Image (cartoon, rainbow, N blue to C red):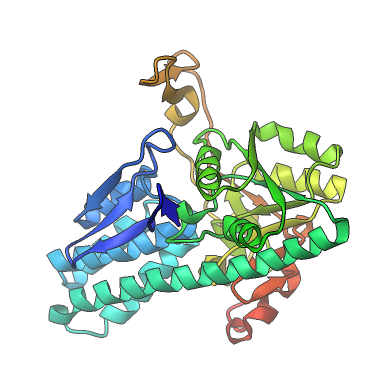
Amino acid sequence: MKVNGTLMRSIWPIGDRAVGVIDQSVLPHRFETRELGTAAAVEDAIRTMVVRGAPLIGVSGAYGLALALRADASDNALAAAYARLLAARPTAVNLRWALDRLRTLVTTLPPARRAAAAWTEAGRVAEEDVQLNRSIGGHGAALMRTLHARGGRPINVLTHCNAGWLAAVDHGTALSAVYAAHDEGIPLHVWVDETRPRNQGLLTAWELAAHGVPHTLVVDNAGGHLMQRGQVDLIVVGADRVSAGGDVANKIGTYLKALAARDNGVPFYAAVPSPTIDWTLGDSLQSIPIEERAAEEVLVVSGLDVAGSPASVRLMPEGTAVANPAFDVTPARLVTGIITERGAAEPGRLVELFPELRHAA
């Protein structure tokens, strides 16, 4: 996608010694990039949400493991780096998928060849992510084209959190469909949830503005109200993990949107590349690890003051009890369909798009 007219991705290699990333912790008020030259720097960037979004977390983890192997390619070092990176964000299954892919590759090689092979493979993971998400955009745009043809008017899409190109290497997942539909000329408007407490909706609004997509930022609890008044035609979200049966783990608040969608007859879709599907899951509510993040994310709000300077404001006194689960699980019964790089499927028929993985499900 473009930033100030320049094509960019959310992560890129710097030779074979480091990766560059967009620092998402300072958006939308400032645009800055960082250079990450060690596995520890990548781990910290994932943990502190300098990089975020399940596909991007996976790609970042792959590069992080490759950087670890440049420092020490022994079996013990490989195991230690794998464990540290995996623990950085436990809910996003793309991280485990990417780390497993690299570990499987390099364990067949002598230590002297591991670092170079891992770096090359991390680059492949990144390029594949771009292609997977571009395909998701095409399939999602087809759904929007059908909706527009039925109503003959601009369609209103509601999304939650940020599932755009910032959350992937390029294109995004849910927003890939929006961008593809917009570029095709399908008239649409996006309702953007602010997505407390990290306010990733601000990143979505920033992306949509840069691409020229009509949008309106709303508070998280406005979605049901909009649906009741017929102002939402379609909900499309991303996900950090989807079960073979179609349960969707996504940013906290997604479940409530799905409940309101069911009550109001609004289609609810999750858009995910296949590495986000966890074919091994049984009981999603019990099996998916839900990340509990720091209380400060709830207690402190950061932004710009009236003079345009960065400022942070504490909302509650020290010592206030806080729970901050980062994700919730939307059961498959509330999901209309899952949009993947191979097309859209009803939740219970997701495996039909990936018959080669039927044994895993």
